[in-house]
Image 1 (spheres, rainbow, N blue to C red):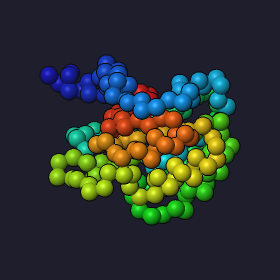
Image 2: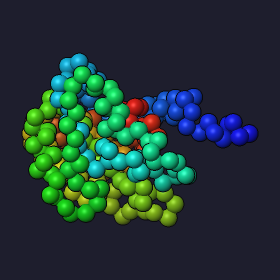
Image 3: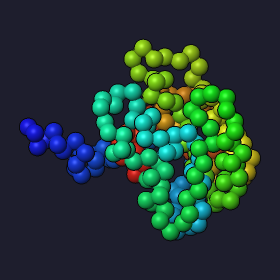
Image 4: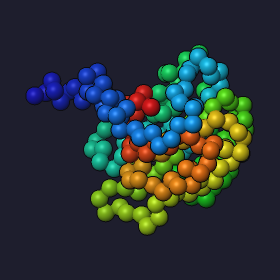
Length: 193
C-alpha cells in the first residue's frame, strides 16, 4: 500500500516511536535532580559526542532512515527548555584520544545550573559481527565526565549504546545521578528524553 509506505515519518508513527523511546529509558539512579523543570533552569549545558548526533543514535539496525528526520537530544532539550538558554559543547569525539574540546565543555558547564552529558557508542561498535572486547566508554568520554563533575554542576548522564556498558564508575560518582543506557533512542529520541 503506497499510502502506508509514505507514512513512515507520519505523525502517528513518530508518536509510537517517541512512546517506545520513553519506555526504553532506564533510570539507574536519581539523587533528586530529576525531573528537570524548565521553569527552574535559566542555563542548561548540553555536552557530549552524542548530544547533537543524528546518525549514531539510530543504532546499527536502523535500515535506511533519513538522518534529517532524527531529533537529537540537543534538539529535544531546546524544544522543552524554551524559556532558558541552552549551552552546547561537544567536548570530545566518541572514539580517539583528542582532549582539545574538554576545556571548552568545562567552561560552558561552569556557567550552567545543570548539565546533560550524552555519551556512548557509535553504531559501528554494535550489531552483527561488531563486538568490542572492552565494555567501558570508548575514547576519552569517561575523562570528559570526570572533568565536568569537578565543576559541581548537577549532572545527568545519558548513555546511548547498543549493549550494556560498564557503568560501575558512575555509580560511585555522587555527581552523576542519572545514567540511561537508552540503547539508541531512534528518530524522535530527543523528544523522548
